[in-house]
Length: 207
Image (cartoon, rainbow, N blue to C red; front, side):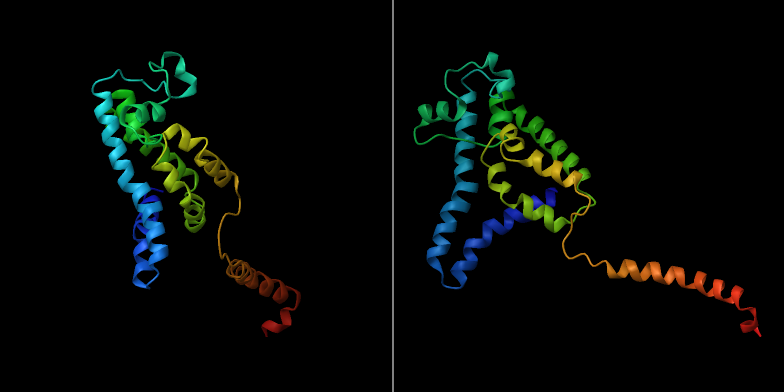
């Protein structure tokens, strides 16, 4: 699971340069702005702003999640709050910023990473017997979501839990499976039994 996300992120990172190599600079520029800038560079800047803001302001202790919003200390939600403090648009960010720094301070980076590792570990156990190509396809669109929203949003609104649930319930979840080898294996196991039955019915064949 972790390797799938890592490979998908690396492919997204270098995809624009493939277009540059073939002279398709227009597509390369578009992908650089959409993927590399939005997915990697912008999130680095936003993460720094979250760190700077919550070194001076009270922590939210996961109250950005609707279930715990009774003790949320600010009037505006986090993206709007960061927008008013640093300018620009709404500054959505990933789990290091929200479940990490905003909720628990700098130590929250480590704790939120452990939490995410546990989520991915459970997901991986549910999909261990499934075709990895299908899993990679289902998660490919969620890489950008994972890098731009809180973990709670990624799990629910982003569809990560739904993907895991569908994969867990699926009985046949693979690409390119050929049933013929299995049939051949069954036929080869049944052949000796048929031969014994024929010899019992016709013992004169034994000489």
